[in-house]
Image (cartoon, rainbow, N blue to C red; front, side):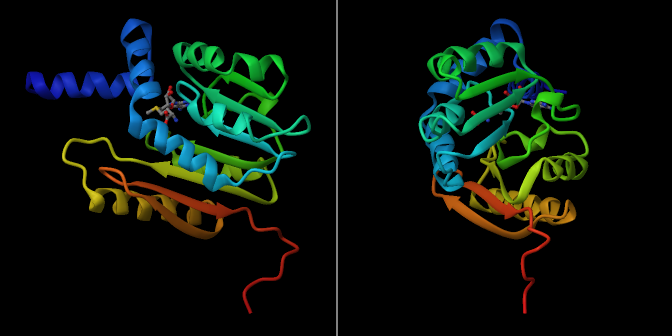
Length: 217
Ligand SMILES: C[S@@+](CC[C@H](N)C(=O)[O-])C[C@H]1O[C@@H](n2cnc3c(N)ncnc32)[C@H](O)[C@@H]1O
């Protein structure tokens, strides 16, 4: 492995599991990079959350999307988040301190592979931004998330590929893979939205089909 490859692998590791001082720097970069900010606020818009809804984010990082959504839920709604990085939980908790105190946000340190019982749901919406690529056995994880969604609840999985040389075609490939994973996990009506950054952000939205809903005629 070349030095360049080793540095790249190490820095990807900091976005997978931010730890210590390098993890704090990775969190600062994620919180301040303009494309990250636009990506998270766009996904929050796409979720179209009502004030009374309960929403869960997996892998919230510095908590940008949590902050956006906490402004949209009212006293009967709630934003939950889980992230396995202690450093990210601390940064996101600082960013969302007022909403946590007001009882609109709960952030928990944990992994998507073993979701804490406090996150049993049911949720109206579940989402992840640049996080699914890090999960072990993503179809199983998505099935577990579907079980935590209310009938008719929605999921949004967003990705902005960060590999060197990523292009629009890399993003579209990512959208196809996410769509396949969502279908394999039993989600219905997947649709892809695109935010034209460089490279574009793709977000695949799908539904936990209400078993009582009429099927396609
Ligand atoms: C690239 S960052 C994205 C952060 C945020 N969603 C954003 O777009 O700014 C990925 C985040 O997912 C978290 N993460 C990665 N794998 C995880 C897992 N298996 N369980 C929980 N969190 C995980 C990392 O700690 C990190 O905060």
